[in-house]
Image (cartoon, rainbow, N blue to C red; front, side):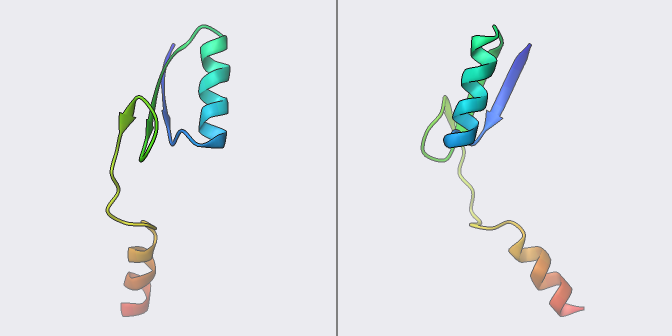
Length: 56
């Protein structure tokens, strides 16, 4: 099985390690670490949802 683990912090690293140990192919993605880097412009993507609720 191939798996993508988003966020390679404490939990993501443990998940990736466990999957790898069981023979799975794992790709990790994180802001600062991982096989690939992904930038996120928002610190909390749910902030926009809260703003929409207040506008109604």
